[in-house]
Amino acid sequence: MDGTTDSSALDLQAHLPRLTARGVILSLLVSNHPVRPTPAQVVRAAGAFGIKESAARAALSRMVTGGDLIRTADGFHLSSSLLERRQRVLHEVRQETRDWDGEWEIVVVTGSGRDPGDRATLRALLARLRLAELREGVWLRPANLVRPLELTAEPVEVLRGRPAGDPVELAATLFDLSEWEAESCRLLDLMDLADSAVDRFTVATAIVRHLLTDPVLPSRLQPDPWSGARVYGAWAAYQEEFVSIPEIGGAAES
Image (cartoon, rainbow, N blue to C red; front, side, top):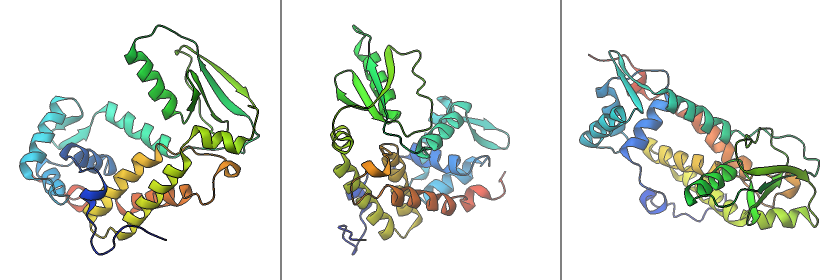
């Protein structure tokens, strides 16, 4: 790989957002579900990722109060809403595709006069469905994804069509492909350089966020080079590596 990151020292704080106590604990529990760790096990595991004991205990308390975690006699477990979110994220990362026949999904926003909050929510939903805005109120993408749009409750009209012009140019207009490719290469370089568990965990977390913005284009619309498959492969490999944290996977303490 032609990396641009300095290999003499990996300063992740200079390259990636700092991990929060809440983010580390959630990732640990999600990755080790359905194990129910004790508070002491969670605190020790979080400490291995640079989280101080006081910060970890404060985050645990807030997460229980906020309903993210449920405390039981045998340890913590994730709330049903977080388990649903886990499944949704995994589903959104692992986008199922079909052979592309040249058609595009076209979503036209028909509602008007909605408040800014509703508009922002709809925009976020359309982006999560990997659609991109061509012009105000008109969103589209190649029809190569196998998933329901689930927009029946929204003020939109869903169409299928073949827009005029070069589909490669249209895809490049809709999605910032050069920026996505540059970020892919940066994250792959960082993962190659990351040796410690903390560093690899930090980079893998950033890779998940990046994959959730992958346009998942048909191969004939992808620029060359395109590192989407390699980024997904790095994430998939890390799932095997991070399948168990000894402090959490071990026997519970009293």
